[in-house]
Length: 320
Image 1: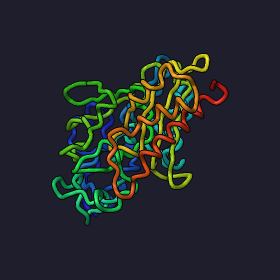
Image 2 (image 1 turned 90 degrees about the horizontal axis):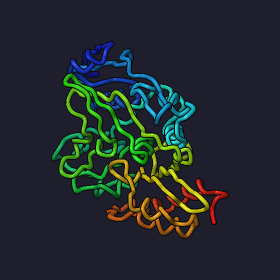
Image 3 (image 1 turned 180 degrees about the vertical axis):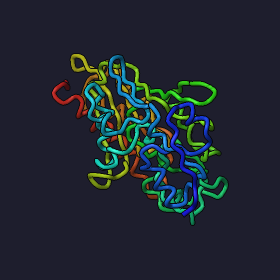
Image 4 (image 1 turned 45 degrees about the vertical axis):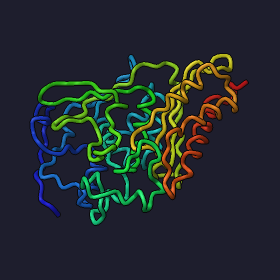
Protein backbone atom coordinates (compact mmCIF):
# COMPACT_ATOMS: atom_id res chain seq x y z
CA UNK A 1 0.00 0.00 0.00
CA UNK A 2 1.41 3.36 -1.01
CA UNK A 3 0.29 6.33 1.10
CA UNK A 4 -1.70 9.10 -0.60
CA UNK A 5 -3.74 12.12 0.47
CA UNK A 6 -7.48 12.04 -0.23
CA UNK A 7 -9.28 15.35 -0.76
CA UNK A 8 -12.94 15.97 -1.55
CA UNK A 9 -13.44 19.32 -3.33
CA UNK A 10 -17.05 20.50 -3.63
CA UNK A 11 -16.71 22.99 -6.48
CA UNK A 12 -15.18 22.87 -9.95
CA UNK A 13 -12.90 25.76 -8.96
CA UNK A 14 -11.54 23.85 -5.98
CA UNK A 15 -11.13 20.66 -7.99
CA UNK A 16 -9.04 22.19 -10.76
CA UNK A 17 -7.03 24.33 -8.32
CA UNK A 18 -5.63 21.27 -6.53
CA UNK A 19 -2.92 19.14 -8.13
CA UNK A 20 -3.80 15.47 -8.03
CA UNK A 21 -5.58 12.59 -9.71
CA UNK A 22 -9.35 12.82 -10.09
CA UNK A 23 -11.50 10.02 -8.66
CA UNK A 24 -15.11 9.60 -9.83
CA UNK A 25 -16.57 6.08 -9.81
CA UNK A 26 -13.14 4.59 -9.18
CA UNK A 27 -13.74 1.60 -11.44
CA UNK A 28 -10.47 2.24 -13.31
CA UNK A 29 -8.31 4.28 -10.97
CA UNK A 30 -8.67 2.00 -7.96
CA UNK A 31 -7.77 -1.07 -10.03
CA UNK A 32 -4.60 0.58 -11.34
CA UNK A 33 -3.62 1.79 -7.89
CA UNK A 34 -3.95 -1.74 -6.55
CA UNK A 35 -1.63 -2.95 -9.31
CA UNK A 36 0.87 -0.11 -8.66
CA UNK A 37 0.45 1.01 -12.25
CA UNK A 38 -0.67 4.40 -10.94
CA UNK A 39 0.70 5.73 -7.66
CA UNK A 40 -0.80 9.21 -7.14
CA UNK A 41 0.28 11.14 -4.08
CA UNK A 42 -2.97 13.07 -3.99
CA UNK A 43 -6.41 11.82 -5.01
CA UNK A 44 -9.32 14.22 -5.51
CA UNK A 45 -12.73 12.65 -4.93
CA UNK A 46 -14.89 14.86 -7.17
CA UNK A 47 -18.27 13.21 -6.55
CA UNK A 48 -19.55 16.27 -4.68
CA UNK A 49 -18.66 18.58 -7.58
CA UNK A 50 -21.81 19.67 -9.52
CA UNK A 51 -21.02 17.98 -12.82
CA UNK A 52 -24.27 16.07 -13.33
CA UNK A 53 -27.33 16.34 -15.49
CA UNK A 54 -28.69 14.85 -18.70
CA UNK A 55 -30.22 17.23 -21.25
CA UNK A 56 -31.87 15.91 -24.44
CA UNK A 57 -33.70 19.06 -25.54
CA UNK A 58 -31.35 19.93 -28.44
CA UNK A 59 -28.83 17.18 -29.02
CA UNK A 60 -27.45 15.51 -25.92
CA UNK A 61 -25.52 16.84 -22.95
CA UNK A 62 -24.16 14.67 -20.16
CA UNK A 63 -22.49 15.96 -17.03
CA UNK A 64 -19.17 14.17 -16.65
CA UNK A 65 -20.22 12.59 -13.33
CA UNK A 66 -23.41 11.05 -14.70
CA UNK A 67 -23.35 7.29 -14.20
CA UNK A 68 -23.26 5.02 -17.21
CA UNK A 69 -26.44 3.20 -16.21
CA UNK A 70 -28.41 6.45 -15.85
CA UNK A 71 -27.42 7.65 -19.32
CA UNK A 72 -28.11 4.26 -20.89
CA UNK A 73 -31.65 4.20 -19.47
CA UNK A 74 -32.56 7.82 -20.19
CA UNK A 75 -35.28 8.49 -22.77
CA UNK A 76 -33.97 10.44 -25.75
CA UNK A 77 -30.46 9.00 -25.70
CA UNK A 78 -29.57 7.61 -29.12
CA UNK A 79 -29.65 3.80 -29.28
CA UNK A 80 -25.99 3.54 -30.34
CA UNK A 81 -24.96 5.28 -27.11
CA UNK A 82 -27.32 3.32 -24.86
CA UNK A 83 -26.29 0.02 -26.39
CA UNK A 84 -22.58 0.80 -26.13
CA UNK A 85 -23.02 1.62 -22.45
CA UNK A 86 -25.10 -1.47 -21.71
CA UNK A 87 -22.51 -3.71 -23.39
CA UNK A 88 -19.60 -2.04 -21.62
CA UNK A 89 -19.59 -3.73 -18.24
CA UNK A 90 -21.57 -5.43 -15.53
CA UNK A 91 -24.60 -3.74 -14.00
CA UNK A 92 -22.68 -3.06 -10.79
CA UNK A 93 -19.89 -1.27 -12.64
CA UNK A 94 -22.33 0.69 -14.80
CA UNK A 95 -24.03 1.90 -11.61
CA UNK A 96 -20.72 3.27 -10.32
CA UNK A 97 -18.73 4.34 -13.38
CA UNK A 98 -19.07 7.91 -14.64
CA UNK A 99 -19.22 8.90 -18.30
CA UNK A 100 -16.16 11.12 -17.88
CA UNK A 101 -14.22 8.36 -16.18
CA UNK A 102 -15.17 5.90 -18.89
CA UNK A 103 -13.80 8.22 -21.56
CA UNK A 104 -10.56 8.57 -19.58
CA UNK A 105 -10.01 4.89 -18.80
CA UNK A 106 -6.62 3.45 -19.60
CA UNK A 107 -5.87 0.56 -21.91
CA UNK A 108 -6.49 -2.99 -20.73
CA UNK A 109 -3.22 -4.20 -22.34
CA UNK A 110 -1.84 -6.88 -20.02
CA UNK A 111 1.70 -5.53 -20.39
CA UNK A 112 0.60 -2.05 -19.31
CA UNK A 113 -1.07 -3.51 -16.23
CA UNK A 114 1.92 -5.66 -15.22
CA UNK A 115 4.60 -3.49 -13.64
CA UNK A 116 7.13 -6.32 -13.97
CA UNK A 117 6.97 -5.91 -17.76
CA UNK A 118 8.25 -3.05 -19.91
CA UNK A 119 5.63 -0.74 -21.43
CA UNK A 120 6.15 2.49 -23.32
CA UNK A 121 2.85 3.93 -22.05
CA UNK A 122 3.79 3.35 -18.44
CA UNK A 123 7.56 3.80 -18.76
CA UNK A 124 8.47 5.66 -21.98
CA UNK A 125 11.38 4.12 -23.84
CA UNK A 126 11.19 0.75 -22.10
CA UNK A 127 9.71 -1.04 -25.12
CA UNK A 128 6.48 -2.69 -26.26
CA UNK A 129 6.59 -6.46 -25.69
CA UNK A 130 3.07 -6.83 -27.12
CA UNK A 131 4.40 -6.34 -30.65
CA UNK A 132 6.09 -9.73 -30.57
CA UNK A 133 4.25 -11.19 -27.59
CA UNK A 134 0.64 -11.99 -26.66
CA UNK A 135 -1.20 -9.65 -29.02
CA UNK A 136 -4.51 -11.30 -29.94
CA UNK A 137 -6.50 -8.49 -28.29
CA UNK A 138 -4.34 -5.70 -29.65
CA UNK A 139 -4.80 -3.06 -32.34
CA UNK A 140 -4.28 -3.28 -36.08
CA UNK A 141 -5.13 0.38 -36.85
CA UNK A 142 -3.42 3.51 -35.59
CA UNK A 143 -0.49 1.55 -34.22
CA UNK A 144 3.19 2.45 -34.17
CA UNK A 145 6.48 0.77 -33.39
CA UNK A 146 6.05 2.12 -29.86
CA UNK A 147 2.58 0.82 -28.97
CA UNK A 148 -0.20 -1.44 -30.26
CA UNK A 149 -2.60 -1.24 -27.31
CA UNK A 150 -6.32 -0.91 -28.06
CA UNK A 151 -8.55 1.81 -26.68
CA UNK A 152 -10.85 0.30 -24.06
CA UNK A 153 -14.02 2.44 -24.08
CA UNK A 154 -17.12 1.24 -25.93
CA UNK A 155 -19.14 4.43 -25.57
CA UNK A 156 -16.26 6.53 -26.88
CA UNK A 157 -16.64 4.70 -30.21
CA UNK A 158 -20.34 5.58 -30.37
CA UNK A 159 -19.65 9.19 -29.39
CA UNK A 160 -16.90 9.61 -31.99
CA UNK A 161 -19.30 8.30 -34.66
CA UNK A 162 -21.74 11.07 -33.66
CA UNK A 163 -19.18 13.91 -33.66
CA UNK A 164 -19.33 14.34 -29.88
CA UNK A 165 -17.32 16.97 -28.05
CA UNK A 166 -15.97 17.24 -24.53
CA UNK A 167 -16.03 20.47 -22.56
CA UNK A 168 -12.88 20.82 -20.48
CA UNK A 169 -12.37 23.12 -17.51
CA UNK A 170 -9.26 24.31 -15.71
CA UNK A 171 -8.20 27.20 -13.54
CA UNK A 172 -7.47 29.16 -16.73
CA UNK A 173 -10.90 28.73 -18.31
CA UNK A 174 -12.97 26.42 -20.47
CA UNK A 175 -12.42 24.89 -23.89
CA UNK A 176 -14.31 22.44 -26.09
CA UNK A 177 -12.59 19.69 -28.06
CA UNK A 178 -13.90 17.21 -30.62
CA UNK A 179 -13.71 13.79 -28.99
CA UNK A 180 -12.13 12.33 -32.14
CA UNK A 181 -9.17 14.71 -31.79
CA UNK A 182 -9.12 14.47 -27.98
CA UNK A 183 -7.58 10.99 -28.23
CA UNK A 184 -3.98 10.67 -29.45
CA UNK A 185 -2.59 7.86 -31.56
CA UNK A 186 0.63 6.55 -29.97
CA UNK A 187 3.21 7.56 -32.58
CA UNK A 188 6.51 8.09 -30.78
CA UNK A 189 4.82 9.31 -27.57
CA UNK A 190 2.38 6.57 -26.47
CA UNK A 191 2.45 7.91 -22.91
CA UNK A 192 0.46 10.95 -24.16
CA UNK A 193 -2.98 9.40 -24.59
CA UNK A 194 -5.26 12.45 -24.73
CA UNK A 195 -5.28 16.18 -25.34
CA UNK A 196 -6.09 16.77 -21.66
CA UNK A 197 -3.76 19.37 -20.19
CA UNK A 198 -2.40 19.32 -16.63
CA UNK A 199 -5.13 20.36 -14.20
CA UNK A 200 -7.95 20.02 -16.72
CA UNK A 201 -11.13 18.14 -15.96
CA UNK A 202 -13.84 16.81 -18.28
CA UNK A 203 -16.96 18.74 -17.30
CA UNK A 204 -19.47 17.72 -19.95
CA UNK A 205 -20.01 15.55 -23.02
CA UNK A 206 -21.93 17.21 -25.86
CA UNK A 207 -23.48 15.34 -28.80
CA UNK A 208 -24.83 17.50 -31.64
CA UNK A 209 -28.44 16.97 -32.63
CA UNK A 210 -28.83 14.27 -35.26
CA UNK A 211 -32.46 13.22 -35.52
CA UNK A 212 -31.84 10.21 -37.74
CA UNK A 213 -29.40 8.77 -35.17
CA UNK A 214 -32.51 7.21 -33.65
CA UNK A 215 -31.75 4.52 -36.27
CA UNK A 216 -28.43 3.41 -34.82
CA UNK A 217 -26.80 0.47 -33.12
CA UNK A 218 -23.63 -0.79 -31.50
CA UNK A 219 -22.44 -4.30 -32.31
CA UNK A 220 -19.76 -5.76 -30.05
CA UNK A 221 -17.90 -8.99 -30.77
CA UNK A 222 -16.15 -10.51 -27.76
CA UNK A 223 -14.96 -13.81 -26.35
CA UNK A 224 -17.87 -14.13 -23.93
CA UNK A 225 -21.33 -12.65 -23.70
CA UNK A 226 -20.83 -10.32 -20.73
CA UNK A 227 -18.17 -8.28 -18.95
CA UNK A 228 -15.54 -8.58 -21.64
CA UNK A 229 -13.68 -6.10 -23.79
CA UNK A 230 -14.25 -5.99 -27.53
CA UNK A 231 -12.30 -7.97 -30.04
CA UNK A 232 -14.10 -5.75 -32.51
CA UNK A 233 -17.07 -3.40 -32.41
CA UNK A 234 -18.99 -1.14 -34.77
CA UNK A 235 -21.03 1.95 -33.98
CA UNK A 236 -23.35 2.76 -36.88
CA UNK A 237 -26.07 5.34 -37.47
CA UNK A 238 -27.95 5.18 -40.74
CA UNK A 239 -30.45 7.34 -42.61
CA UNK A 240 -32.37 5.31 -45.18
CA UNK A 241 -35.06 6.58 -47.54
CA UNK A 242 -36.80 4.46 -50.17
CA UNK A 243 -34.32 1.61 -49.64
CA UNK A 244 -31.36 3.89 -50.36
CA UNK A 245 -28.81 5.20 -47.88
CA UNK A 246 -28.89 8.98 -47.56
CA UNK A 247 -26.31 9.36 -44.80
CA UNK A 248 -24.22 7.24 -42.47
CA UNK A 249 -21.93 7.45 -39.45
CA UNK A 250 -19.55 4.57 -38.77
CA UNK A 251 -16.81 4.05 -36.17
CA UNK A 252 -14.98 0.98 -34.90
CA UNK A 253 -13.62 -0.21 -31.57
CA UNK A 254 -11.47 -3.08 -30.37
CA UNK A 255 -9.23 -2.81 -33.44
CA UNK A 256 -7.46 0.53 -33.01
CA UNK A 257 -5.41 2.55 -30.55
CA UNK A 258 -8.17 5.19 -30.45
CA UNK A 259 -11.89 5.13 -31.29
CA UNK A 260 -11.64 4.74 -35.05
CA UNK A 261 -13.92 6.77 -37.34
CA UNK A 262 -14.37 5.30 -40.82
CA UNK A 263 -15.08 8.17 -43.26
CA UNK A 264 -14.28 6.05 -46.34
CA UNK A 265 -16.96 3.55 -45.34
CA UNK A 266 -19.44 6.37 -44.69
CA UNK A 267 -18.76 7.92 -48.10
CA UNK A 268 -19.17 4.57 -49.85
CA UNK A 269 -22.54 4.06 -48.16
CA UNK A 270 -23.98 7.46 -49.05
CA UNK A 271 -26.22 7.11 -52.08
CA UNK A 272 -25.84 3.33 -52.18
CA UNK A 273 -28.79 0.95 -52.17
CA UNK A 274 -29.54 -0.78 -48.87
CA UNK A 275 -28.30 -4.17 -50.08
CA UNK A 276 -25.91 -6.75 -48.71
CA UNK A 277 -23.64 -6.24 -51.71
CA UNK A 278 -23.41 -2.49 -51.09
CA UNK A 279 -22.75 -3.08 -47.41
CA UNK A 280 -19.93 -5.52 -48.16
CA UNK A 281 -18.37 -3.16 -50.70
CA UNK A 282 -18.40 -0.29 -48.22
CA UNK A 283 -17.10 -2.45 -45.38
CA UNK A 284 -14.20 -3.63 -47.55
CA UNK A 285 -12.67 -0.17 -47.01
CA UNK A 286 -12.76 -0.40 -43.20
CA UNK A 287 -9.35 -1.96 -42.63
CA UNK A 288 -7.29 0.12 -45.04
CA UNK A 289 -3.82 0.67 -43.56
CA UNK A 290 -4.18 -2.14 -41.02
CA UNK A 291 -0.99 -3.62 -39.57
CA UNK A 292 -1.91 -7.07 -38.22
CA UNK A 293 0.31 -8.84 -35.73
CA UNK A 294 1.01 -12.54 -35.37
CA UNK A 295 -2.05 -13.36 -33.25
CA UNK A 296 -4.59 -10.77 -34.45
CA UNK A 297 -4.48 -11.13 -38.22
CA UNK A 298 -8.17 -12.09 -38.07
CA UNK A 299 -9.21 -8.58 -37.02
CA UNK A 300 -9.43 -6.85 -40.44
CA UNK A 301 -11.82 -9.53 -41.68
CA UNK A 302 -13.75 -9.49 -38.40
CA UNK A 303 -14.07 -5.71 -38.63
CA UNK A 304 -15.59 -5.90 -42.10
CA UNK A 305 -18.07 -8.56 -41.03
CA UNK A 306 -19.02 -6.66 -37.88
CA UNK A 307 -19.86 -3.53 -39.88
CA UNK A 308 -22.00 -5.53 -42.30
CA UNK A 309 -23.79 -7.13 -39.36
CA UNK A 310 -24.60 -3.70 -37.90
CA UNK A 311 -25.83 -2.41 -41.25
CA UNK A 312 -28.06 -5.44 -41.71
CA UNK A 313 -29.48 -4.95 -38.23
CA UNK A 314 -30.42 -1.34 -39.04
CA UNK A 315 -31.98 -2.05 -42.43
CA UNK A 316 -33.97 -5.18 -41.67
CA UNK A 317 -37.27 -4.80 -43.53
CA UNK A 318 -35.94 -1.78 -45.47
CA UNK A 319 -33.64 -3.42 -47.98
CA UNK A 320 -34.22 -3.54 -51.70
